[in-house]
Image (tube, rainbow, N blue to C red; front, side, top):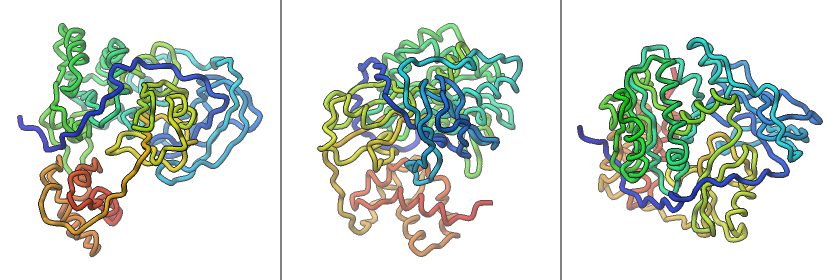
Length: 425
């Protein structure tokens, strides 16, 4: 089976062998009530309240929402307005830590007797997609149609990031446990654990662990970007196509990030909700690149300084990878559920944009065969019919077109703006 188009990028996996370090407990944390896709939560605590580790401090009655838990024990000092990286505003609970890390009485293994109680437990865990997208896991694990294949996304194709790789090396048994958990609860017959070829140690280890389990197929994928994008990894590991207007479960597939699967297994054992994140800290302004596990709400600044970053020299900070991550305006923004990397650079060159030379490179690298240059033309004249014909809604915003463009045109950004012109039914 042929594989979809993509880019060959410098991996820059400088922290492949960096064993995860537990970050020091901060003096205070700021925990946003919106850290995932879906409706923001409302605070369940007030200023002056004492909270404990794992205590639920935010929730919503909306079905497409995920509760928020305290990552520390201490005292609530403020309920502030917080501007997310995408520009929306939500509440944030600010907590002064007491250093004791007293665990809430509510933290205990969930009782799961059937699929309904399983989905409810997953929601209560606060789980979301830990690859960066933040899709609520309980929604994904409650599909309307039968699922035949679980694709476990272990590609981690962005440069620099090794957080998922360290999960594979350090917690392989938890990953297999999480896979078997989901498999049994949803009645899934086939598992595709999809790993990029640039992770030979992980591939070898999982093949050994799963050698006697015919339901788990360790799929080695080419090292190309965006191998970890949902539509791409589904096609490259199963041959199935997610067409326009479909979601993976429509074609009998669910995709879960490898760290999400691993977290769910541990949650079912101890009942501790999602209150920590492993992050890769790297970039040329970082003196000591590391993999750090920090409590949610920890300031980015504290982590960067811990890794030897001269904050006065930093010109750009990216939350996530260099291709799909977001440039952040404030180093004091907190670690959230979807944080998987923090990259700091001491230089940032804004490239000058010139006219399109019709070279077609953007088409060649697009994994789903879009024509970004034509989309750009249609967007400029606001031709909605043409944008629909050009299938702009299929764009995954991987950024490959922008990266390869010799004229430095912001094609991926234009694609996202073009989507806003398409009426939603």
